Image (cartoon, rainbow, N blue to C red):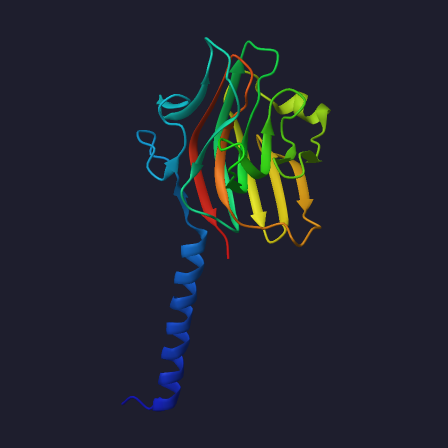
Length: 218
């Protein structure tokens, strides 16, 4: 005979239900999703006719045969707030200034219409691993250690960026080594926005990005 009181059985059922609900919530936040399928520009927008193309599963911007006339960005159609963004990138070029970057918590601006405004995990000599404020304060917010960059950077090859945005804190890791830990002191700066990929004006140069995944955080 089952002598367990009915109220106790109901209490146990409630605990199990709450546990399963919490598990569902936490796992939904913790699941990384791919932002690119390597075949289409689904979920992204930008100059897809002249500047950006898909090559060997990567988004590629710019040209190795001519100058890049001005900055160009491809960006997500959706906005994000708290997340961990991971991707591989490669920057190659023969010009005097070869540069690119990964925008987070950013937006399109109207003047000039091809620009974005917001935080950028920078790319290029003197800029690798640093956090720049693109078309807003127009300054380096955190400069990566040049000695560390010299040790970990793989020039003209694929590298890994991990960009973690939580609250007002932004951390950047290059090839598994943290290069930036920044907390935004200005409460008027938005902490949400689009994700963008840049090829900087100059070159000739190409910036390539692939295996782009995002894990949303609570």
